[in-house]
Length: 297
Ligand SMILES: Nc1ncnc2c1ncn2[C@@H]1O[C@H](COP(=O)(O)OP(=O)(O)OP(=O)(O)O)[C@@H](O)[C@H]1O
Image (cartoon, rainbow, N blue to C red):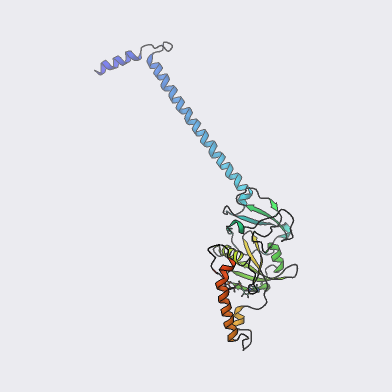
């Protein structure tokens, strides 16, 4: 049977075909060869395409790394960061030990905005880096945010005001940072709080202060005059209040007889409680109101 089949196959394959009178097995061989060549060609085409894609990807990544937007820390899409550009001879005298932090001021209306036109606010050259924008254009100092209050201070201004954040200028230390006495160029005394960035605490405290105290005007509330947002630094600038602190008032440095009588203390407690109750309603137009995180009220 198999001998018959082999003989039959040989005869069939050896028959000349209409393709140039070539035998069938030659035609089949040519077809198989052509098919293999086609497959190889397609494979090489695929590999070339892939190589080109990966080359482009790496090139774009390399380009990005060198791009201005990559010079700043990774930040969320809504973030705008001010990067201070200091002339070589005007390097900041002080570099507070604050690790790089993400800026996440979040709401559009609380972003620091910039103006191209010359402004009397602040000093020094600054540029804005917007994470959504690959180009960073040097612009003038920022005006205040849509909050419509306060003053933007440069790090250099505050350095000059606080004698380079010297120890002699330290007037207190709270849970959120060290407070320095500063004297601005116009001789105004200010309290500069350099926020500590303990697990992003600086950003949180900054946000709470700016959103709550920023717009507030009350005779019993220390005014927040402005802020400094520069690189990773977050500083708050308050009016300087020379009345000592609550601890001194309540417990000491006032002599053996405290000027705070029982009645006065009761008044203070009632007034504080009223202020505390009204605080979120008066100052926060959005919900939910931030929790009262500090001891000014
Ligand atoms: N505007 C200011 N004028 C004068 N001294 C200030 C001013 N702000 C803060 N200080 C001084 O710095 C100290 C620390 O203030 P800070 O606001 O950092 O913390 P706190 O209010 O004492 O506590 P917390 O950390 O809970 O807010 C105060 O006790 C006070 O002596």
